[in-house]
Amino acid sequence: MECDWLMRPADPWDKDIHPHVARENQTLQSLRDALDLRDIVFRSFPAVTSANLRMFRMGADSELELVMTGCVSRTNEVLRRVASVAMRARMCGFHFSLAQGVLERMAPVSFSCP
Image (cartoon, rainbow, N blue to C red; front, side, top):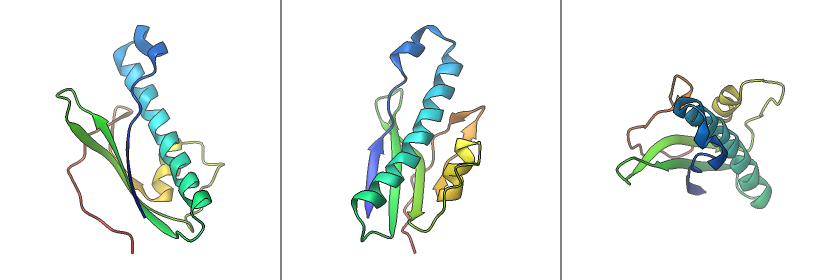
């Protein structure tokens, strides 16, 4: 299964806070969304054992930027006791890069789950 999705925009409530903090908040929400999407895929499609997932965001130039990929498997166990959302996402098979707590743009990549 393959699924591409668009990262949610920054929360309107964050408009009055420092821009970097708003981007950190958006990143944290995006990581949670990725984990939730993984759960939704496997709950909704019982026959699916792995999925290729890609998250994009709208760039400043109105072009889509790839910011996260994942080859996630039903067998990847998410350890809820791991405090870091970023670490839980990595343990599930998501790939991304953070710079000062904010998702960085990734180079376009082609991949498939084994």
